Image (cartoon, rainbow, N blue to C red; front, top):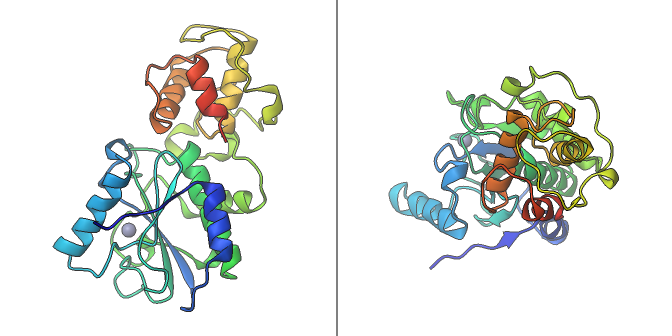
Length: 268
Ligand SMILES: [Zn+2]
């Protein structure tokens, strides 16, 4: 059976720096899967199911994409880098294709947190490795009557995130501008991680207030999970951000921040 290799962001950067590719790379394609959704993700099984669909049902030579970015922030390899992808009809020559697992159409799932971190850092590493500029990032919808990679993702916003990844800056809540949640009061720039992250020893839940809740909100914002205003109030927005982070990080989804949640959020 075809198997796939899984990289952390750090491993991916090391791999892409060293890999030799004889084919000229002229652009980077960005897609979302639409189906499967983030919530359907089951690790390598999901990648194999796509491989099976692409090769058996569609009749392609291999899985369509070179890399798949999972909701948990890992990156799977795919099609040989020596082959053009099967991503955008008529526009695949010289392409390097990224597929993000999820449905990022407006009102569906969100590109955020560890997955946003992974895709932006991986794309930034590929731009550098292949000597490309931000103008050579291509969204599927630029060449097809589709919303891919999702109507909630604006291209200028995405490129801004890639630039920040290249600059080594962390994504903060004021920068994760997915439209339907940016109507919240601005929380401004967030302080660096040093103040937040260590578990206080207190389990926090909806309705709690105080400095510990504020630290939790900062930590969530630094990881790209918008918790609402950073005001020390464990609001429904904060609870929803905790739940989304817990789902991405494969820990129990209860919206309550205890030791497991802190450990997962502070893991690098
Ligand atoms: Zn697409």
